[in-house]
Image (cartoon, rainbow, N blue to C red):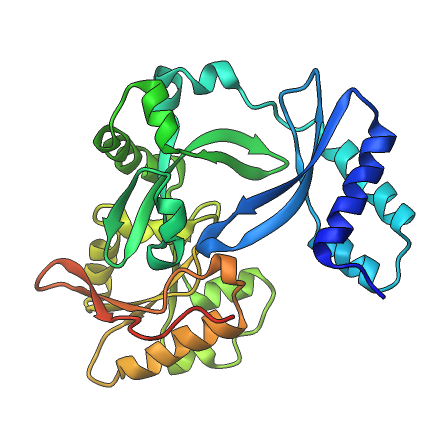
Length: 305
């Protein structure tokens, strides 16, 4: 009979603790991720190091359920730890200095309802039916954008308020993560994928940022969506395909918003991980009102799973 996930994590923790010795502390850690997704991981902290990488356990538990030996799994985890322990050190002194932080603060957009618990502990602002949360860019590690989410206690440490952080984030984000719009065909061609007539049926464009990380925030950049609407000479429908990117289609009498809502639902339910879902709402930009609005609210549609 296989162990439960919790029992597996505790057994692995004890074995790692025995191997690592008294100079290390090993603990099971629960990480609250986007959309209230919780991942369990094991942290291994060396006494002389301020970095304690978290190794998430889902994949290792799958290996165990597939018959892999526990001792072999523990060795796999140690190899992962060895490769990550020399990652970028969290720069405590710099992070506590608001003058260093202020030019690195940026924002990202998340689903407000699905992140209600997380939003109790972080400064945030409203945007449509979403929430704007703030983070500090810590640099690039292994070609990945590294950041730390700003929490309420960080505001106390810096002696600043939420409005100051928001103003800096709105100013910095388009600089740190410049927006990018390309056609769906251009994106697929760049990936070596054939469009197969999809983009001929509905003209589609992708809005994200240069790094394609939390790129949905680009629709909150001042003027980005409005300029694109004027360039196309059309109002726009905006489909939230994930927290990383949005799909833009020109609005018109022939474009049935119900069809687009169904597309959003299908993408979220079948193509995007729960953690990366942004919203089930359809958004619209009106050139006449110069406003980005909710065209079709998520309503009773809930996140799958």
